[in-house]
Length: 553
Ligand SMILES: Cc1ncc(C[n+]2csc(CCOP(=O)(O)OP(=O)(O)O)c2C)c(N)n1
Ligand SMILES: [Mg+2]
Image (cartoon, rainbow, N blue to C red; front, side):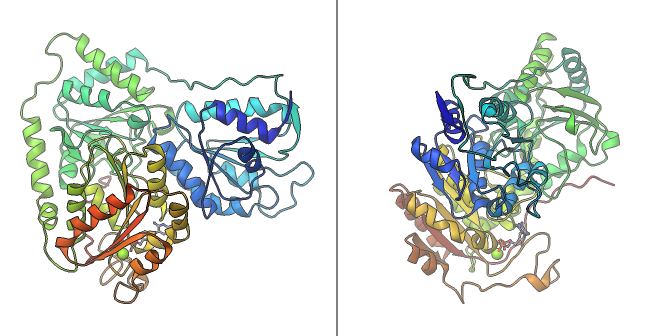
């Protein structure tokens, strides 16, 4: 049967189990989506179209692929704006499928902006559908890239969506996705080192979540009695109420990174950045690096042993190797858990204290503590924004299930939290979904708030309203790093709860600590009927949180 390319793509998306597509118009595939009955989640700008699909892939750990469409071709206005979303997805290695119009034959070189070269810098793979018959081939390839190996965004540019081809000539079969298991010799070498170490530390990254390997991580940690640190993006890969959990950031994490003689890194790139730890004194430590591909091996640090393969298969192989060495081959429990607990208690004491603070303006940690009290931590989703909310929540928020919290941003593009909260509602409709933001993140979201009302997405936006960009380190103000770009209109000048209330949100403005819990409860209750909520907590500026550990040079 002869069909047009757009229809062919949509039918293949359906075969691949794609249930909805986020978009900002226009894209020539959209009408085929409409005709073929695939719902479109229309965002209010192209960056959010990408970010929602990106977050959906992250939150489902790639078991479902987020798909978005945006404008491209010779009029690539949408793509120019979507670039920010793609850059974030590429930076964080998220398997999102982006579909756009391609530059038609005969029109290349017409625009200043070079679509293909721009997109190649922010994608794992860029496909250009230059012949209608190639539709199944390129879609197969796209889903292979999305479901295998190191995750990353894939983009498909379609120069002629109305061209036709014979659908029966090359029938499409859904792509399974493939994994690789590590070399047994590398596993043996890693276990030799691991069992010989005095003070090993497991350093887990988001690859563990993508591999669905949280249980295997827990089993290995228990077998070898090693404390566990997770990266920001892997927050939740290991249950944070477990006796071997050290933390994501804070003095206790620094303590363990410093004292360990061996780091077993799994599913992480080990790239010391703005929002991840370095490994102090790496020359004095043995670094075993388990990763899905070689891209990160011997990057920044000398790798003592690499174990290349899928994180789940690797963790299982490591466990089998340890167990195969006979009973008692694991590491004795000793005082590991007791020491972890003591280190956590000591480091977290200052935060636990302010979680109970009665001061006004409200201390932001009081909001986080109360939020944890109100939420069912095994059936909810919380995410942060760039700024203090990321730094503070990643220091203290207890994450008990994978993706109960989404940490994001090797670089963190302000505004992503709303996209993440939307994606979480789509992925797990029964879970409460909360985005915690400052004024900068809120500014990015404003145009997209209408989507929540239109789509009846019961999400709560928690605003830590502190009247300024408090930012990193000592902050934007006073002796901070950016004192001239700190102040915006604060809660005394603008009542954001009225602004957003006028849109149709349930809104509240809370200045008394005792009102935090009741207000949160009301918001979550309203969410149950599909109505979004916004709560403005009038907070002090309190740029205090756990630090990242440097590289020690
Ligand atoms: C797109 C983008 N541009 C710039 C930044 C740099 N940046 C990080 S945090 C921040 C200000 C945060 O202020 P606010 O949202 O009020 O949060 P607070 O730290 O006060 O809680 C800025 C400008 C960024 N992360 N993303
Ligand atoms: Mg602020």
